[in-house]
Image: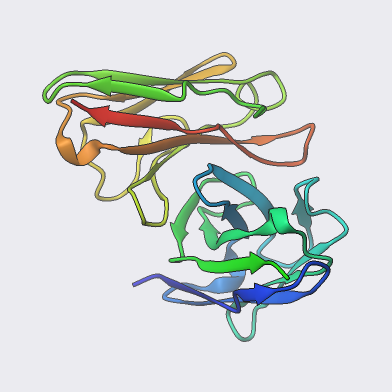
Length: 120
Length: 110
C-alpha cells in the first residue's frame, strides 16, 4: 500500500523557518516526481512545488519562489520542503503528493496534511 | 484569479447528471492533460480523473472527464449524496512552469 506521511508543521513567528518532511512507503520513491500543495483555511488548493524523480529538476509557484526549497532523499524515501521567511499568508495545511510519473502528471496519492500557522 | 476557471458552485438532485467546467488557455489545458480532484470536507484531496478522461482506481464509472481545446469538463451521472464535495481541476502550465488549480467547485446534492 502506498503511504505518504507529512510531519514538521506547527506554529512559527513571521520571518521564521520550518522544514516539512514527507516519509513515503509502498513504491520506488526515486521513480516518481513529488510535489507539495497547500490549502489556506477555507480556501482552495494551491500548488507550491514539484521535484522530478531523479532530483534533477525543481519547479516553484511564484508565491514561494526564493523562500521555499523542495528536496528529496531517495535513499531515505523522504521528501522535504524548507520554508524560510514565512508570512502570515503561508498559513494552511500542507500536503505532499506523489505524481503518476512525471512532473506534468496528476498527483495520484496524497498525504493527510500537516498544519502550519504563522503568527507572533 | 486563477489561470484556469471553474464555476464556484454546482448542484443537482439525486440521480441527476451534473457537469463542472474548467476553462483555460493554450499554455495549459490546450497543451497538457487535465486532472480532477475531489475533496470531501475535512479530508485530503484525491484524484478521480487523470489524463483528461482516465478514471483512477476505485472511482465509480459515474464519473467521467473530457477535454476539447482549452476547456475540460467533469461529468457525474446518477448523482448521489456522497458526491457532495469540492471539485478541482488542475493542469500543468507551460508559461508558469508549474501546476495550476482551478478555484474549486462546491457541489451540493439537494
